[in-house]
Length: 183
Image (tube, rainbow, N blue to C red; front, side):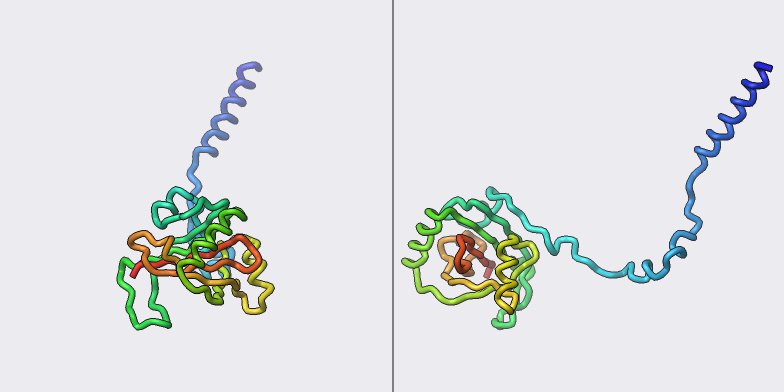
């Protein structure tokens, strides 16, 4: 009796083991379960659309930072043809957009330097999904989804090859939006 019980247990374990070791093969039926989902499989989504960097050391290697920012996020993109210029961008043309927040003390020092180097002008920029939440919220209050501020020439931030661009101080904040590009 004891041996028949052992034999039964061994037989059950063998059957169970064999069942576990069989491969799970897709017979092509999986995609037929929800065909309406699979029809949209060719939709192109840019996985980097909302990605930004916040490495200050890397940013400092790309541009001059006259003061250390308390916060920074930035993106480097390739440049497309702009509507306001006849220049056709080259294959290596790049653009950096950086959102910088300085301490109150450094904001005042930066504004003093900017005012010495040239005239200010009214400026606005469209909000990006990777901008800090405070700036996105500010853009939603303007009625045209833009962030408004005072613009300046950004010469003090230039570092080769980024030798063209502007800096905008966002109204009523210590945030600045820097836009530089190669030329």
